[in-house]
Length: 611
Image (cartoon, rainbow, N blue to C red):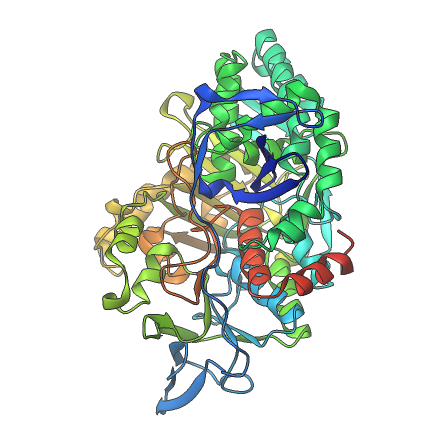
C-alpha cells in the first residue's frame, strides 16, 4: 500500500507492507507528473492517497568538504584589490577582509537566503563566511539613507515574525534558532483602490465580507465563504511540517517525517477523508481549487489573482495551492495580523547579521565574487550561491557547465522587472489617518500582471517615525515585477532618452501616490525624489535583466532543488525551491544549511528551539 501526503513544502511518500511503515519524502520540485486519472483513495489509518508518480532524485549527491581542507586562500593581486585564488572563489575586495583568509563554507551574496544559510551554519559551529559585493548587506531587502530618510529597497508587507513553534514562518524559525528578535508594529489593514471603489481592507475571518457587501455583490460574499470553507481546513496540511526540519538528503526521514509523524497523522485525522483527499490539490495550481468550487464572480477571481501575484509574481493559475493556502491561514484566520519591523526592513537584515556574527560567522562587504573556482569538475570547497540561477551560471567557467544545465537555466522564463519611486516629503497637510500600505489596480481587464497597471505603495514612517526626519514621511512605490526590461535594454543611463523614459514610465506611480496620500501631497515639495528603473534594479541588485525571479508556473514547471551539476556547489534564494518571497527564500537558505551538517546536529537544533 502506498500513499502521498502534502506537508508544507514537501510531499511525504508512504509505503507499507505487512510489518513495516516506510516513510520517504519528495519536495514539490521533484513531483514530475501526477496521473490524476489513476488517483483513488484507500484506507491507511484514517485515509491515504494512492498516486501514480515518477519522482526525480532530489538530494545532495556531493558530500561537503572535510574541515581539514580550508577552502579560501587569500593572495594579493593589486594594491586596490585582492583575489582569493587556489580556493573556492576569486574575489575582488574593496575593503579589508575580516579575520583569517580561509573558511569551510563560502556563501555568495547576503540576501535573506544567504544570511539565513550563513547564520544557521555558524549556529551549527561551521566556519562560514558570507561575501557581499555591495557595501550594504541584505540584497533586495537592504535599506539606504538619503538626507535622513531611510528607504526600504524591497519587501515591506510582512507577517509571522512573532510566530513560534512548528507552524511558524520560516524566517521566524531561523531567527529563533539564532536567538534574535525583531521588534514589530502589528496592524490589520491596507488601503485598496480598485475600479469598483476604494476601501480599507482588513485581514481576519470576517472583515472582508463587509468590503464585499459594499463594493462587490451578494454573490461575491457567498463565493468568498465557499472558498474559506474549502481552503482553511487544508492549512493543517500546508503548515504541518516545520520548514526548519527540512534538509536535502534522506536525513529528512529522521528530522521531518519520523519526528513529526504523530502530529501529521493527527492533522489528517482531524481533516477527515474529504479534507485529506483535498490535500492532493496542494500540489496543483490554486486556480484548479477555485474552478472546482465553481467560483465565477469577477471580483473574487480578480482578488484571488491579485493575492497570488503579490505573493509569488504569478496569477492563481501559476501558483501552488499550498502557497496560497499558507497565506490564507496567515491572513484570514482569527487573530491574524500584519507586522512591520521597527526601523524598517533593515532590522531584518541586521538581526540576521547579528546572528551570523554572534556564532562566529563572518560577513565581508565590498567583496565581489568574480568566479567560482572549479577543479577536476568540482567546486574546491562548499560554495553556496545566493545569486539568481542566471547570475550563478555566469560565475562558473563556461567549459565546466553542462550544456543541459545551461540550456535549462537559459530557457527558464523570467518575471519582468521593477520601477521604483522613493520619496521623502513633509507630513504637514497630510491626513493623520494615512495608512502604511496602499495598492492601486487601474484595470482588472488588463490583468494584475500587466505593465503599468498595479502600483504598490508603502509609507512605513506611519508606523516607524524614526525612518524619516521629524515631521516628515518616507514613501516607496513600485511596479511589482511588471516592467518590461526590453524597453530599457541598452539605454545609456546618462542619456536624455533614458531620463525621458523614466519620467514617462514613472507617471503611473506618481498618480497612484497622489491618489493614496491625498490633496495635501505635492510633487514639487518632495525633498527626495528617486526613480528607479529595471536598469537600476539590474545594477544595484546584480540581477540578470533586473528580474523579479523565475516565472515558473505550478503545473507546468517546478523550482530547482539546491544542488547543482557542479559537485559541492549549492544554491539558495528565489531561483530554488520553494521559490519567490521572503518566507520561501528563508526556507531555501535553511534547507541548504541543514543539508551541510549531520542529522544529529540538525536534530539537536530542532530540540533547542522546541520544535
